[in-house]
Length: 368
Image 1 (tube, rainbow, N blue to C red):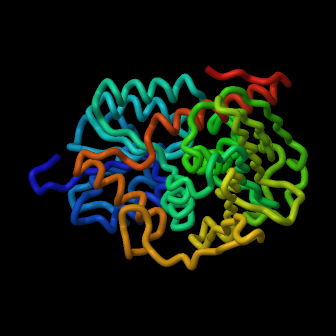
Image 2: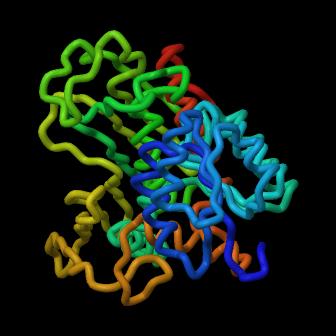
Image 3: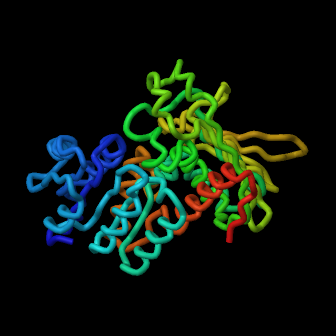
């Protein structure tokens, strides 16, 4: 780290997720960070990001290896298509950089395991971009679970369902570059929340189904019509996950599904002492939790007011992207653990891969 005690940060991949999440959050942390490198295979995109967010000394590149070799960098944010997450992350860790990699960790568990091993061997910090953990409703629900308010959580539903919300930009429908569709794109967020709230990272078996039923029906899509010819991934996917302790997780994910009551990046938890369900517009930071239990021989539901702060920021309300960036940067400066640990993200990738495999083979996939 340079002498002014600011972390020098480079962005690899200057597309939508970098412009919508990473850069707007990092630029608010000028007392702790300096954005010095911008890399994208499309040079104009890197140059535009540099112009809008870069420091006076920042440079733009089309080759991330050249960038890492030529300028002084402490931290790398990997915001590229899924297929290159592992390659870029591993190279950056080997080069002595701390890495935040966008979700999912990798397109398969083998690559995710290599990322995890490299982080351990190099001693550099690695985290994955599961920003939904930093929502106010998510933090409150996690705290309730941590305090055993729901008891033994033996059934969880992880929701990531859109009625018509197929992304029509970038490489989202490209199976080779992304590794899949809604399951690996938005299902990954819901599964991460489920495992995190349950504090259960020991899956035993997985049974899954994927469908491509609506690719030729692009009408009504919130992002405009998609091209059926280039729609290579599933449009919906579902997984039934059995954990070692007997608990069950049902994961539902869809970019397009004919149902009215949709949910995204939310969970339903059922425990021995009570239950909880997330509602509202989670992706707009307007989600809330309804708890249910029995009191005085009556069924009771309670909805907290939402007062309070987000993880590590008591009394202060931050957008999830800002809270994520702040906690990540502070974990480096203070040498503490990031909230999203790579070991946890590895299990998410392992389960997603098993759902795809089960859907392909029609068999239950057993996990170690």
